[in-house]
Picture 1: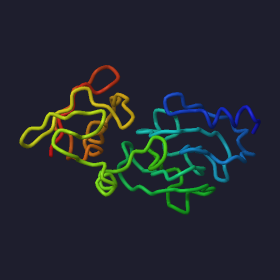
Picture 2: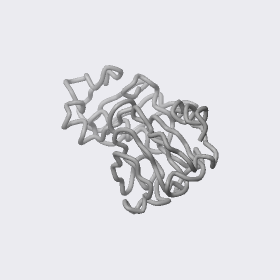
Picture 3: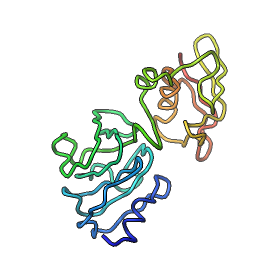
Length: 200
């Protein structure tokens, strides 16, 4: 892979994900800084995609159930269904054959678990003290309005202050990341969730 292509791979983000050509066959540089590069063939061959944040559904990027090898920096969770559902496993280094995890051609969503773009699970958040906090103080970006059985979040934002995109399961995923139960109501704009009501 040329130096320019390597730089492109390392600079690509989820929102500007770039498919790299099959020239990735001689891929040699590791992903860095919480990034991942996925490949459609074992041994880092074939078309590739560089990511540095969570992907709720690889189908939207043309890589659903096609990943056979992966190189990551940090720890990444990969799951067999969209929205981090189904069987998941954690990968923490170069993996030339995903068959060792029984995940070959079987990944539909993935996210970093540490470093930039952290999206820890509900249980991990609570273990680290980032789950449900004091009354009405759910994160620095969300001030929930707490009721008896629910918490209402107008214009919800993720851990980095970005709006939560519309997508199947994104409202419930947001609620879990706030240390709460499932989403019982969500209002959707054209691109982002506008209101979310979470069960306690």
